[in-house]
Length: 193
Image (cartoon, rainbow, N blue to C red; front, side, top):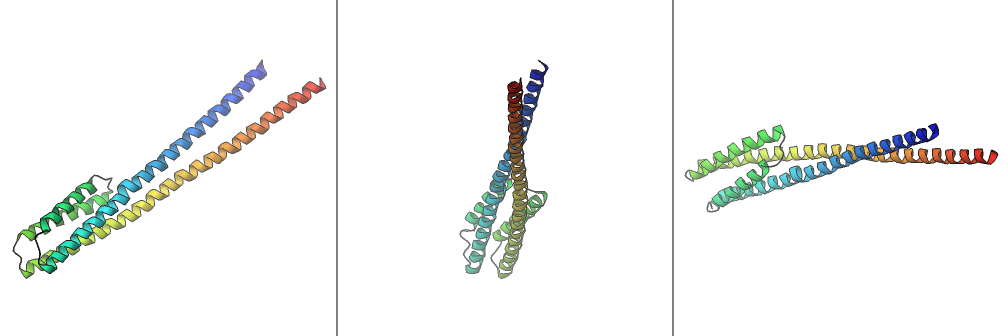
């Protein structure tokens, strides 16, 4: 009877250990999956927004050079929409600060555009666009850094998950060997008796 209890307890411990490692493994897998989604949603899409804003600013530069201002309002609306989309993502502190500065400088550019189209105003608008592009470059650098950090975090979770899977296999092999020994040991005792 005592042997049955010991066997039951040993099997219960094995079951609980396998269950615990499975839960830990599942946690690491979910973290890796969450990180991959975050890289796409908060980094890759944002990089697309930055690129689109940069294109729109380049379009504004061309309009200034060609002195065609008729599409400026459309371009401004597109930039405002992209900024709004950008703000819905998960921002780091430095990203939020740069985006806030970008927005205030963009509003200043829009005010400059409503004034007369004299050469000094055009030069001022060009400087403002250059400043905005610099903000975009800094925001782009943040995307690269954050993507690298998130990728490293996901890799750590996947490495941990792989290690746990290897541990589970090792543990199951040990259990199999132990069961073989128990079965054959009992069989040898039965034959001797």
